[in-house]
Amino acid sequence: MIAVVSIGTLKRSLIEGVVGFLNDYHSRFGISVEFSGEIPTEPFSVAFNPLRGQYLGRVFLPTLSALKERLNATAVLGITELDLYEEGLNFIFGLANPSLKSAVVSVHRLRNEFYGLEPDDELLIERAIKEAMHELGHVFGLRHCPNPRCVMHFSNSLYDTDVKGPLYCPVCEEKLEANLRKLGVFP
Ligand SMILES: [Zn+2]
Ligand SMILES: [Zn+2]
Image 1 (tube, rainbow, N blue to C red):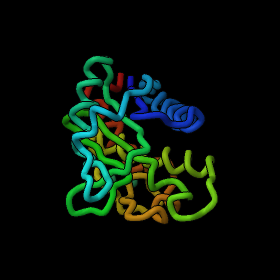
Image 2 (image 1 turned 45 degrees about the horizontal axis):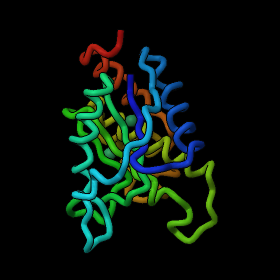
Image 3 (image 1 turned 90 degrees about the vertical axis):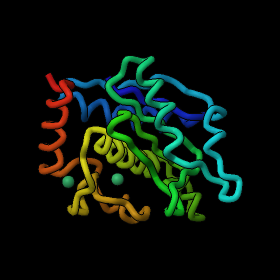
């Protein structure tokens, strides 16, 4: 089971859209994806950089990994409204650690509103699905893919996210299947 948690409050339709897609996709590997509830943002206040007004992404991953153990899950994905960054990068859409089997995705910069455009809930869900698939791909050992339509293509901007599809290309999917087999996740 892959557990999805909301870090802070997010719209139910957003969570359901992402979890529904992930669950449908991963069912081919015999893996279910479940929403495991909301966790508070307070424990992550140590990640807050007041000079940037952003949270350091990597700080989230060990906490999420500990939660994964408690939930007895194969992997955990946190989704948050908090704006994330990494050293050397202005922002990140998400981050994953394959050893910790945990990942985090921020919807902060996936929203049209962030760029002064009209809100679009459906487009937001579509983008969140792509970022979630991408980070889970990293969790299971996939690297960035040169195919701009593949969900493992690196997104440097929202444009890149919108160009790529929500699925792995055949090359990445084959690797994913092999990696899941190695992990003993795939029956
Ligand atoms: Zn990536
Ligand atoms: Zn690919």
